[in-house]
Image (cartoon, rainbow, N blue to C red; front, side, top):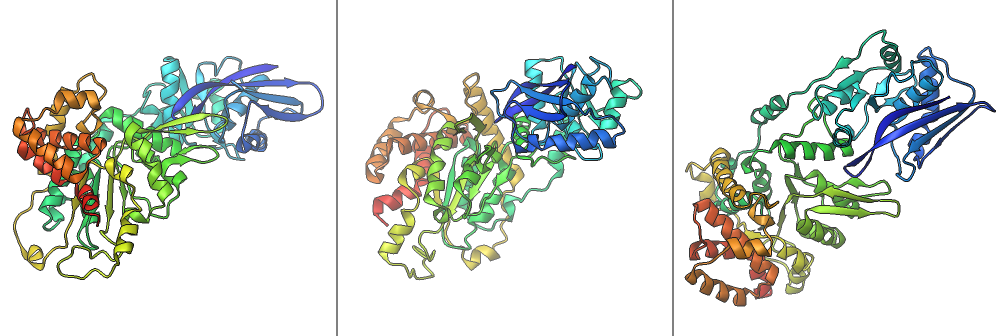
Length: 514
């Protein structure tokens, strides 16, 4: 007897409808699974056998062959336990034929027949709906709300294998799960974020943070220990524009694949802030592994990746960031497959000017030799620095800055300015697949970054003095365009350009050979 049950498989965020074909024939008892299964799928034989028996159902002592089609796609994970068990019950006529024909099944089985949650449900449901808009889903209870974010009216939650059998026999129903996007999105206002007003002094660094948020620019803080670099970086999400529905869903899909999505709130509604330790490997940052998984740059999609103590990261890790920073995606190639994950993030980094951190400090003496300083700064390559639009010095605070009671502009006020600038950019780049100034290419720069006559002369002198590369040249223009947007100006004048040039602190260091 042959039966077919629909399921789904993923490669990266790309989903494919999978058919679980079950054939039960005569001969010596055997249980074989084919179709490029991994170890966790081969182990499902024992889970399925025990779950069927412990649910009061009959497990056939015959030759059982399971084919996961299409066979050329590698399958992994325990999410096929439920469709395999359903296929066996259909093939043995313990549940009516065609009773599950319209449903896509996902779920891991425990030995007592309970259906456990699995990873990647959100992108799988989204992919199946694009292929077949009429598909319905039977999911574990813990994953049902996640799947309902895509298809709120066609998701059923199944707690146990016994409940699935009762549903197929029309003896009882399964709970239909519905999700309200607006309810999830409204929760953004209820969550506390660190406020920019809590940072004492550092007016220049705060302004740089506002410009970075307004244009989506990468940012580097250079300064001595304790100057507030980390404190400033952690407040960047509080001034970024609120996430759109599409951004929420895409980021949630990445977290779903990584198994980091909350069961109670399966929608990421705040921009991620990822801060990996400097001992992290290239695979954990970029993604990959034997079975490729998203790394920190993908988990920071639509948000912020903060690299504290930038020179302490391994050189291979930093160099691996160069291509994702340009292409805003990461391509992980393996012999069996090529996986693509989004990596549209803002890079915020911090570093000391030298190993002891006191270089240029007026109150403390630097103990480092010129060789130590050069070696420390050279850990961050020029090509990577070129890809960081804004490089700003964060000096040590004076005690008078701590005593000053002057009111500071809070995150709410700065966020309004940022959103207004982003609104100008969305109007400018409508239907151009560009969301902010940082994503402009050469054609956009020529069209939208026109300089006034005085600004052209200023830029010519700065380009020669600082020894800017062509990439740094373009990035200065992008930052100047953002500053002009914050001012509501149509053209870039000398004031906008001079401020943008001041944000190339790293080029100044290289030019002075510090």
